[in-house]
Length: 150
Image 1 (cartoon, rainbow, N blue to C red):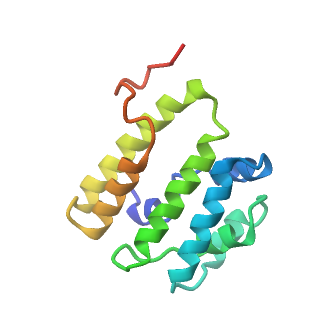
Image 2 (image 1 turned 45 degrees about the horizontal axis):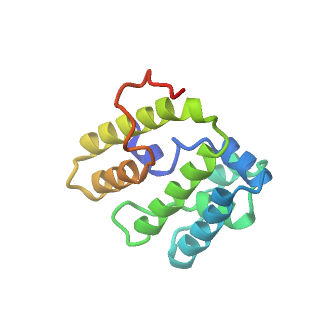
């Protein structure tokens, strides 16, 4: 498991986030606010490769710039980065049908828990992964990934 890529938001479907912006969902607008808050505290330089990953998507410039410059897990901006990633997941989920959400949330929870274990749950990176896991909606759903609501 590549923990650095996961910290960078590789588990987010950025194409779906772009769809969410195209549909003008509330979650996509909240992502824009999260990107702005992150950019206020961000200190890192943009990564050209990350910029190219989202360059063709219908995303606001602030979201592209935020995505292109993730912090290090132990740096203070990591908290705002986490909120930005949480908002991106919420925007992505706006494009997923209700019946498909429980299995996706289950996979995200499981993967983030495993990443936290690999990073060490007491490390800055491990705590970051646990924070993302705990921020996911649907905590009241059964753990069985085969569950589909009627």
